[in-house]
Length: 339
Image 1 (cartoon, rainbow, N blue to C red):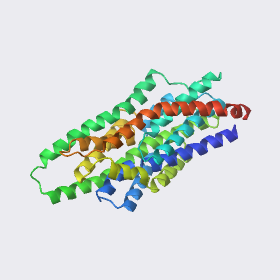
Image 2: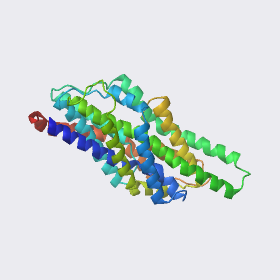
Image 3: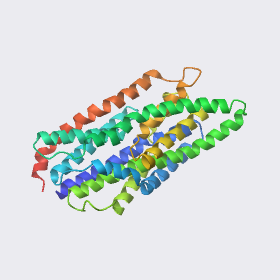
Image 4: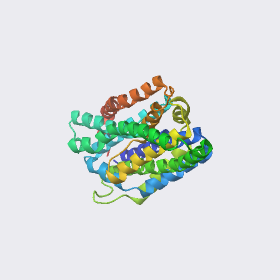
């Protein structure tokens, strides 16, 4: 079991790193596109505040831990390992496609798929995937893009009306300054959400292996490792998805970029600190950009690309369900031999 635990923790660290470079575009794309921040400064800000968010956040961990209860022993570790492997593979694939997608959706789907497979093999299932799970985890992830789109659309209309007589140069400077701060706030919120998700996964692996008890809180070493690995992932820049969001998806100006960042930040902080539910930064930012562009007097949305992004969001769940299940079936003979 010690070898299986080590492999599970290594894959967990890989997922943290992949999430870092996959999702950093959500923080830096609009600020780089509008020159509110230079690319090098933007990734540094994202990395630092992502680490701070990981260290400071507490609210989301209770939600995730509340339903992520794995059966003890090596087969519980196998479910966790296969779920994380499915999320890693999906993250790498969508990054290669240069399309933003939800790592949280991929992870949850992979875990559920692996849990179904392990039941087919006659082992104990993942506990907690019930009505409460759908209310507290799945429903917020599905509703977030719709809310982000609507709020962003309305905010652009409101700011456009309030600023109708203001000087263009003043508005541009104000929006770029607010956008630079917004990039840091989105990174902080991303760190709170994804950092605590990753901390919960690694802690669950240690609990399942019997290394620590179920009554303990977050382990300091695990928190520090997740914060460092996540920051290292952010430092890579995630330029493929950054280019998609900044230059290909919509026509961006400082106002729309600023609105997208602050609406996304508000939803992420509201989800983690007020409602205690997960919020996907990838879906929030992409939907926010589409909402701001929909309020443009000219055609400002790359509709074929937007359709592909939404298609990937829809495909994430069945693809990762299947991948998690197949991986669990494939490694079961090896897990059975583990000690």
